[in-house]
Each structure stands twice: as structure tokens, then as C-alpha cells.
Image 1 (cartoon, helix red, strand yellow):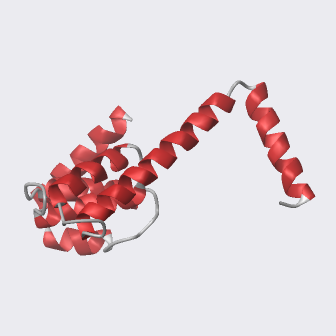
Image 2 (cartoon, rainbow, N blue to C red; image 1 turned 90 degrees about the vertical axis):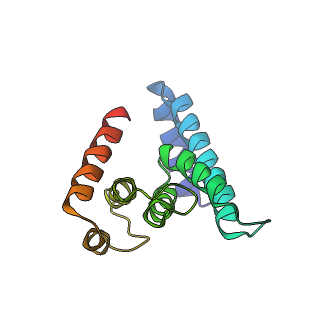
Length: 138
């Protein structure tokens, strides 16, 4: 780390401490780290990297990580719902998670337009409604 970078870091930490936000910043880092670990475990279950494939377990782990804000988990969960793999097929739920992931301006999977092309208007509308409800709870 350069001297300039150390000063920037020290100033940032001092400002966070001054405003009483240092515990929140550490807590946010811990939450992000936990979401990353949960996603990684879900990915192992989804792909069979560390044992047998278990898409039901993968879906639950992806859901936990997605609820914590993990973008990749949102895409993977959307794919499972779209296929009905490990979860009951629910195209509106798939659209909800894809929409929430795309809302963060990160495209890791198919474009939203490609997903919409596979859905009925009622599924898109329901997915949008569910995404808005999810955002209100956050």
C-alpha cells in the first residue's frame, strides 16, 4: 500500500469513527463476506464441485445470499426458477430475481429482454410486482 493510499484509508476510518459509522461499516463488510461464502457454497452444490449436485440446497443457499444483496446469487436463483430446477418452476419469481440483479446495472446472465421474450405479459407484471415488494422490505 502506498503512503498516499494509507493516508486516504486513515482519513476514511477517522471520518467513519467520527460519525459513529465504523461499527456499521465493519458489519456491512461482515455481511458481504458472509453472502460471498453462502453463494460459494450454493455454487458448489449447484455444480457438484464439492460432492453431489443438490440444486434444492443450492437454491436455498442462493436465496440466502440474494436476500443479503449478492448479485450473482440473484442471477443463479433466477435461472433455477426459470428452469424449475431445485425449486418449483415459477417464471414470475425468476423474473423478479433477474430484475433485481439487473437493477444493479450488472449483467452476468442473459439480458432482461431475452428473459422477457420467454415470458407472458402476466408473468412479467407479477415479477415486477414481487420485485417492488421485495425492495420495500429492504
